[in-house]
Length: 255
Ligand SMILES: Nc1ncnc2c1ncn2[C@@H]1O[C@H](COP(=O)(O)OP(=O)(O)OP(=O)(O)O)[C@@H](O)[C@H]1O
Image (cartoon, rainbow, N blue to C red; front, side, top):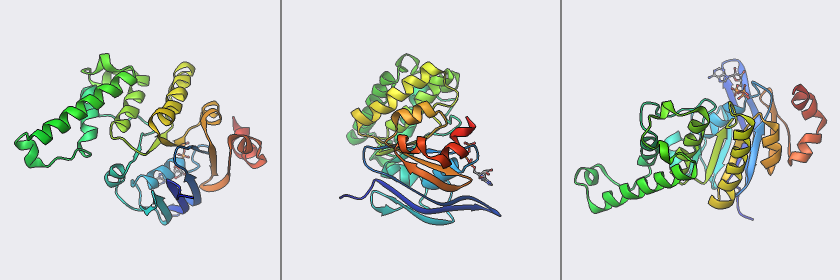
């Protein structure tokens, strides 16, 4: 059997006296949708920040495509195919919608500064492909008509979609979404669920999701990992997790 796409074990993150993440383990197999859930302050975003190189974990192993990547900076992880969105939308708000997608691809373009200076055929081809990819994803996300609008002026749901498009133009392997349904209305959340399913079925994405919307989590996940106060509480299929008494007590019982 091949190694999991993402294999995290013994992950710990300490902030001074606070052990915010304590021995967390999770796996994402290729093509899986895995959700990380837990009450407010459970440590979910801290786990994401460790996985994506924002924090250097205090302990533990993070293997991505078989390689130990713990402590690797975010831009290198992104090049390797691990990309994320944020709990609070983070776009280049003053840039146009399409510029946001072009900038995102810059690190991934196979061109040198000299090639850019002399506008070599290779550089021009690379730029054309980046523009085509941006246009494709803008259309897919129903954002094409806003291509030249300043990103900060888009409606909130559109900004969320642009953030996902910004990940997708880099052609990632693992997409990590931090509360993608936050601030969306029920219709938009249902559309998001459909989009996530299609990212997997049509684009071969593997997805790790932090989400509070239980309908979305239970409706879309292959596996659910539950943490509470930084520590692992349960993991399994949505059905197994839904019926776990510890989870009901610590988390689902709250809602
Ligand atoms: N940079 C930091 N410095 C100190 N403490 C932090 C830092 N980041 C997070 N924490 C603490 O770590 C704990 C876990 O926070 P985290 O944001 O990871 O939880 P969460 O599960 O994502 O919560 P929510 O669902 O509310 O977003 C909290 O007690 C938080 O205050």
